[in-house]
Length: 152
Image (tube, rainbow, N blue to C red):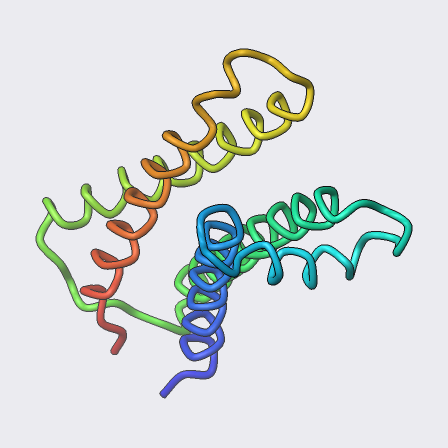
């Protein structure tokens, strides 16, 4: 097995972990305690619990996004250099993967901007959570379709 593929896969699964953690912090029963612990990594002890939980949510999402982009970047660089090759897939699957991957990328940026606007109190920020659900659907669809790209 190619080390680049192993590292890329590990980064993609870390991205899933980051995204799921960010989601769980917002909606899970014990999400607040997890968010508080993660948020305390980047927050001073004098900050309120609300700020720590919010920063834990943001940190989880941004780390997930960073791992996602890093794993994709490694895969593309190694594919261009010729170190990894993929078995051919049907064109429909190729287009589906391309559209869902690009859609997830842009939707994450929209979710991030809406989250920032939520902090500022803008009324459009009420779409942060619904767009985040659509982002996760796109990202998960892209990941599942990416599993069909076998490396040889």
